[in-house]
Image (tube, rainbow, N blue to C red; front, side, top):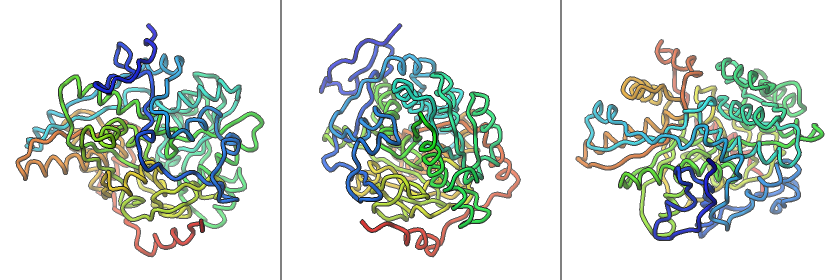
Length: 463
C-alpha cells in the first residue's frame, strides 16, 4: 500500500508532519530552513565565488543540486519509488537499552535508533537510494563514489543495482585491506571497487608519489571518484556524507525517532551521534534541533568523533577543499586541512578531514557539543554493548555508544534520571579485524600532535 500524500504542516503537532499511516515519513526535513544564520555557501575553487547550480550539475545529479542549494524549503516530499524502497526496512526500530542500563546501574533511560537492519548494514542506504533514483530519472548510466569503511559503497552498490546503474567505487586503501568481505558485498551487487589512492587516476598517481605507502583517506578517494566521473560519458558523482543534500535525506532517521518518542510520551534530554562527515548525526538531530531553533523545546546534542581525526574538537572553522586533490568546491567547515591524512583507524567511516557545513555552523553557534574519544575506549564500549544488548555495533556507531555510556554514568553519579538517545548507525559484522586486534590486546590509540595538525592546516586556501 502506498503512503498517503504529504499532509500540510500542523504547528500543534510538528512531529506528525508528513507522516504516512504506517509512520514512515513521506517528506524529508530541511533543517537549514529553520536556521537563522545559514551555512556559508560553497565556493568555486578557481574563482572563490559562490558556486552556481550549473557548475554543480557538472558533477552532481540535477535534483540533488537543487536540494543542496535550497535553504528555505522546510519539507521536501520523498519520491514514491524511494518511499516504496524505504518500506523494505523502514521505519527502523527505536529500542530501549534495558540490559545496558542494568549493567551500568544507572537511573538514566537509554534509547537507540538502530539503522543496521538492512543488507548494507547502516544508515547510508537512506541517501543512496534517493541519489540513485535521481540519477536514473536524469537518464544517467554510471555513478562514481568513494567509501571509507565500506558502508556507503555497499549502500550505493545496492541502490545502483536496484535502478540498473553502473557503480564505480573508490575505497580507502586501509579499509579495502581490512574489510575484504564488505568489498565483496559491493562486487556482488555489481560494483567495481578500486583501492584508493590508486594508479588509475591522475590524482591517485600524484597522491601516491607525494605520500609513498599511504593508507589513503576519504579526501583522496573523493578526488579519484570525481576525476573518474569527469571521464565517463554519462555519469555523475554521488556523495555519502558531508553535503547538505545527504543530511537532508538522512533526516528520515530523526523524524522517525521523534515520532516514536512522542508516541511513547518520552522527551529526550541528550541526543548523541558519531560524527565523521556528519550525515547520520545531522539526520538524527534534525527535527529536534528544529524545535530548539524555533524555541519549542531544548535538548543537549553531542557529536562524537575519533581522537585520531578530531575536526570539531581540534580543527579550525574555515573554508577548505572538500577533497585532497582540491578539485571539489570549497566549503566552510571545521577542518584539519584537506592534506591531513589520518591514521589507519578501524572506524574508517570517520576518517574525513572536515565536517558538514550545517553541523559546523551549529557547533560554531554553540548549539551542540563535541567530544573526541580514543579507539580503545570505543571498542571497550562496543564490547559491553554487544554483551548486554546482543548486537555487534560498527566501530563508527560505537563512538556514540561510548559517550552514551559516559553520560549514563554521569547520571548515576549525579542521581539524575535523564533520557539519552543515540544513533546506532550500523552493525560491525564486517569489522572483525578491528575486534580481533582489540581482543588480542594489539590495538593502540593514535592521537595527532599539534605539529601533525599544523601541517594539514597550513594548506588551507586563502579566501
